[in-house]
Structures are given as C-alpha cells and as structure tokens.
Length: 425
Image (cartoon, rainbow, N blue to C red; front, side, top):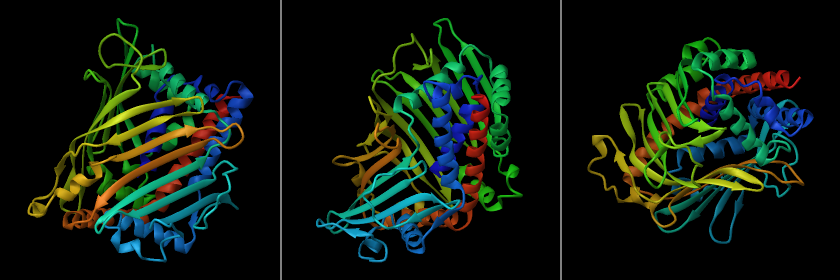
C-alpha cells in the first residue's frame, strides 16, 4: 500500500497550503517548470491507468508477495525467475512502459536505459545464504522526465515555506482555491479535520494536521478498494518520530483508526526542531517507530523499532537512507507464544535491513525515482505463521483492490497535473 500512502502525502501537501507559488518551483523558468511538472504527473497518471501485467510476471509477483518470508517455496521454481546468477541468486526482472494507453509490465530483462517518462524497472533478487537463510534485494527505478534533484527538493522547500505565516483557516481556503480539482478528488477519500499553523517567538512556524480516511466517499465506484481500507488500513496503528542525537524530535506522525496526524516545524522552508531554537536539520537522525496491524483475528507488529535515518543530499540526488540493526519488541498473538523467536533477530544482524528512496537526476538521461531495499530472513515456524497472515492481506489486495486503487491514484494525479498546469498559466 505504499502508493496509497504516497497519494495521501501528496494530497495533503497540495491542499493544505497557500500554495500559488508551489507550481513555479518545478523549474528555474516558467517554461521549465511546466515541462517538468507535465512529465512528472503525466508519468504518474500513466503508471496507474490501465495497468497490464503479462501472465508470467503477474504470477511471479503474486508468489513473491506470498512467500517473501518463506522463500524456499519459490527458490527452485523456474516459472518465477527471469535469470540465474553464478552465486546461486535468482532474479525477477520487470520492465514497464506506457504503451497504447496502458501501463504494461513484462519480465524480459533489459540493460537499456529508461528513456521516457513513466518507464519503469523492477528487480527482485533472492540469494540463498544457508539451509534456512535467504537474502532479498529489491530495486525499483521510475523515470520522471528531466527535473533535477535540486529542483525537486525546492518544490518541498517552497511548500514548507508556503505554510509559514498563515493560520489554519487561510491554509485550507487557499489550498482549495489553488488546487480545486485535487481537493475534489482527494476529498472523496480524505477529510481534513484540523489544521493549526502558528508562528512562534523564534520566527519558526509550527504546523499540526489531522486527516481521516473516508472510504464511504469511494464505495459506490470503488467498492473493493473501500472494503480493503476498512478491513486493513483503518486498523493500522502507527506512531513515529525523527529525533536527533540529543533526543530532540524533528517530525512526528501517527495513525489510529484511520486518522492521520503530522507535526512539524519550519523556518524559511526548512525543517526546524519541534521545540527550541531553530537550526539546520542534522544529516543523521534516529527513526523511532511503533506499528501494529490486524489481520483476521490476530494483531501483529513492532514496538520500539529504531533505525538510522540519513538525509541524502548530493549534487545529483536527494533522498533518505535507513538502516535497522536493533531488534524491536514484537507484538504477536498468544497462539505463537510457544514458538522459538530467534529467527526474528536475523534481519537486524550484520548489515541489518536497509532501505533507500530518492530522486536521482542524470544530465544525459531521465531523472529517476529510485527505491532500494535489502534484508535477510531465516525461515522458521513463526515466520511461516506471519507469512500466511501477510499472504492473506496481499492476496486480498492483488485479487480485489489493486485495480481500483490504481484507478483512484490515476484520477488523483490527473487532478494534480491539471491544477499545476492552471497555476503555471
């Protein structure tokens, strides 16, 4: 459901601010801003409109989702993998492009660069480390035109700056005026409960936002997606904070019963600590996370998960890199209390579990939205139990809700594109 969360963040970003200046931040000139925004949002609309996967790729993708925690079930399945490496690795390639009004995934490996907005490449690689240990690598690239990483960061900075010096009522009104189409489509699935924006004595601006999911707004047209949100997403409980080495929080967010809250503080379009004298955000922070989900009758999740959060800023890349090397406290149902939990430590040993997401530009080619992840799993009875629960959620999503979620996301990105086009005229 990462796409759903991405759409949620974008909806909040473009409808909560006095954001008439934000569209112009997409490029150094009005013409460049329009070209960049058209490429980005055109690619996103194309990505979710009429998604087609060739049968072999569709089946392999579903099996990987079902057996991610117990990969021995698919390691020797020749119908899943596209390529085999000399070190025993198995790889599934998925190339995608906008073709005749559809977004088509194939599993033919290619070394050609992505050369058009919307082109995508997905790589899932599995390596056997021992009798019951397997290493996963995931890589995803998505072409977004020619915007530079610095200009993409400037869009975020301009949005943050636009929240400053305006009260909550003004932000909501100006956001609806500047992005009316986005507000209409987003308002079918999200309701804005509270917006509080206050400038303090230090010249910084504190922003608090609360929204909640409204699946009834899409139920008549997208019933399976609405049901999935009711069944799974509404029951997720999450709380996270980003803190520096001294324990000072910089960003805080939460989700409970379908209600999402976000707290942040900025000055001049840059993050500031939630309390105290404004100062630049450190390159390295700590992510603290509690999260549980309910699947069938069981609640599973983690408490006190901590990881290293690094802000990536280079001449051609902006993004975030995370590494988790400390086992959290596990929230598991009593039925698995007798099972050995040692395998749950394995993803946090050695190099740990890593995740990196960012925007990387290339003066000679497409700018890419990139995602990379690595982890190691150790098969066991407890992972088989968790895997079966997760497989239920994956199956419900892929078989029923995914197509409808894609349709909603395509309509939301189309509305954003139209509003940004209007703001650049």
